[in-house]
Length: 68
Image (tube, rainbow, N blue to C red):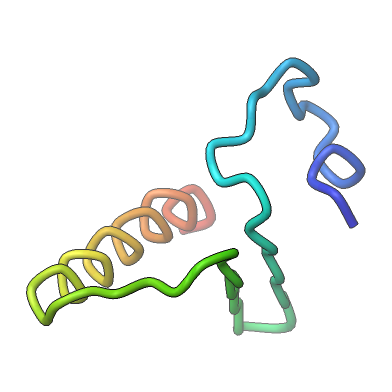
């Protein structure tokens, strides 16, 4: 399902910043999971990997904070 099909306020003129990335999510009870399949191999050293993990944490935290 495409984002524009599930989010009513999806911006129709939005230009995707991650073309060809495939997003999957699951929401059930008290568990939310999301995965992204990239159209390329992501090669990160240890520092960049930790930075990405922190960025993802803060992005989810910002989104989920409205439910607290």
